[in-house]
Length: 340
Image (cartoon, rainbow, N blue to C red; front, top):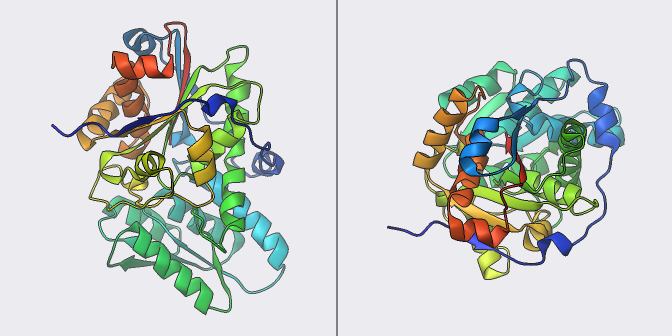
């Protein structure tokens, strides 16, 4: 049996970083249809996992897009358009899921065209949702990283193209940072919803690492310092490979039902946060994600395989005495899971 991808490190809770830009929160609250997504308490599952309190931040109810990605895309596009003014603009991005739909929706709301590139193997339902937003969609013969390369080349060769990508590389960092800043809204909501409770552990899914970066930026710039667990598909465990190598590392990927996390290279912008501020990362299998999907549905939480990954990883850690001890999780822990 292949060992579960797993990495744990000391000192992450002592690492600090600047506080995120709070402008996104006010921007999102001014959008039509905005409402905080629920933080759902699951006492029966908390008891099963041996913790005092377990809550899931249910991003399946974010606007009508069923995903957190709109928070980042909408804020980044707002900031970029403030700088571009009235210049003709076509929004361009690559995606394996919800980010592309978020960019397409932002384009539609602003009356702008959008060109979206997807890798082969993206489910038909994802394709249909992007097309329903009115975007032009192109399937790239390759994986997610190849789709990103094609989208970047398109935007660079087009006079009016604006690349809105949620991963960074040398020379392309500002818009990915604005996307990460947009996710701060989610954590402002969590803080309000927890009230007097203090989180002991937060479990977050990892694709290229932008949401994980936002998680780390929020909690490593605050007085509350929970342990932070990143979860990725075992077939696309690029962050675990990078942490183990001590440097940014790419890995080959395979098909996974967690298509929104099927990324082979961490974001350059996210990497310093992941390297220093993440307590642990674990890889989960498609079978584990499928079982968790059913478990959450029975508990009344709607999600897909990508959204279920963070709970699958949490479950794998809390039911393994060695991994649980490595993170120092006691039976009085307050746990927050991000269901994206």
